[in-house]
Amino acid sequence: MDAAISPTRTRTKVTAIAGDGIGPEVMKATQQILAAAGARLEWEDALAGAEAFRKGISSGAPQETLDSIARNGVVLKGPLETPVGHGEKSANVTLRKIFEMYGNIRPVRELPGIRTPFTGRGIDFVVVRENVEDLYAGVEYMQSAGVAQSLKLITEPGCERIVRLAAALARAEGRKKVTISTKANIMKLSEGMLKRVGEQVLKEYPDLQHEHMIVDNCAHQMVIRPEQFDITVMTNMNGDILSDLAAGLVGGLGVAPSANVGDRVAMFEAVHGSAPQIAGKGLANPTALLLSAVMLLRHIGDFATASKVENALYVTLEEGKDLTGDIAAPGTGVPTGAFVARVIANLGRDSAKVPQREYRRIELKQWPAATWHREPASRELVGVDVFLESSESPAALGRMLSDMVAGTAFTLEMISSRGAQVWPELGGNTFLVDHLRARFLFQAPRQDDATAEITELLTRIGSRHRWMHVEKLQRFGGADAYSKA
Ligand code: NAD
Picture 1 (spheres, helix red, strand yellow):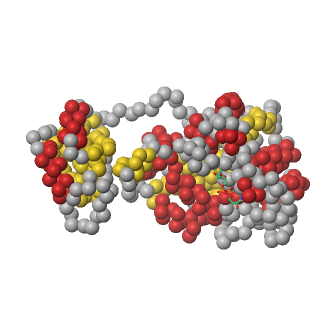
Picture 2 (cartoon, helix red, strand yellow):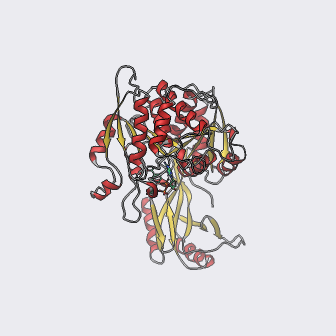
Picture 3 (cartoon, protein in one colour):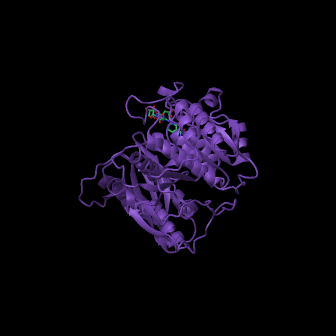
């Protein structure tokens, strides 16, 4: 993250994207409270979302907005509507990807005055979610007319930086434990990468305890005993789902703040959407964006103003006077403006109920701009998996493919359907679809990339069947770089 600009000397320029629906209302409310608290910020307004799409900007964010973000490095953002079914991308995803905001930070803290089934349990943890990799790369293909594939890409540097972010956040907030949560028991290479890399990286942080928890159990534990968590770190989709679950423990998405951080840009936003049903009616609750702005103030090193705003909000929620309709006692809801006035009146008061935490800057390792590459100690090619469309029985297909490779460098080792071996038959009841994987092994491992043999194999298979893709079966540093059937 960018270096702090001392709040006492100069104003920090922040790109303000008000966004859609209730966005302008919660942005104005937040800016009013920050100004009253004496935050030394200078806002640079920028456009993104529905209006940008209406202007024909298919990314949802015009160049001036991207320039402003690149210049300032700090963004406060309201919700952006994602048009459904017009082929446009999500402007949120665009911004995260363009500026490589790889870390999503979602604090999960019990809020005073917001009653939930978990009230009184002292829930106070953070979900750190990898934000740009995994299935959200959005690389998808129809394999046959009825079989879809989505590519789950997990990288070693992607895992390293998200775990370092989790560790740096733990240190900045005086937290003690990092829980790496993965599905490494099933996806040993992709999800397993976060576990492996994470456990290695965390050895460099002897002041932090760390543990691994299978992600389904993590979902269960978050509901059964949420107090046990301090910092959790997850791949993109797991983190997407569990961070929403976690928000539900402490009052829901409407009051949940978040930060998206990268090496050069940090963007702070409420978790909720544009709430079009209540837009323009003065009913919006600015709590989530205000708490996101508190995270922004800590990011730029203005800890005093951050605590002042946070405490004024806590006192307001605690006392329960002048709350917006979504969180007020039935029949007592007030307009956004009255809530803002109450928070401003409470500036300078500290909450007696919420434990105060010491914060420091999050110190992140800067990644070099060069393309990341690690050469393994050795490489061997042991065969190929060919994915093909076929409605033959496994026995017939096995015979055909075996005959086809007779006399070549390959032998057919097995055929699988959706990961389960169906030839040679194991005697189960695997349901068959027209998407099969045939595994061909070389008689002896190869050191070259065997393009000629593989092309010859595909030519033979292509004469009788439709193949859709090929995966090399490699060994890196003596270890299998592919999953077993
Ligand atoms: P939503 O969060 O907008 O609304 C869900 C419910 O919560 C509604 O009943 C709404 O009135 C209420 N609500 C949300 N925020 C509130 C607030 N601050 N104060 C009072 N009530 C609040 O979710 P949705 O309806 O699924 O999405 C609406 C639009 O927002 C969609 O276009 C979606 O794509 C977009 N969206 C954007 C973001 C983002 O920009 N980060 C996140 C989620 C959804």
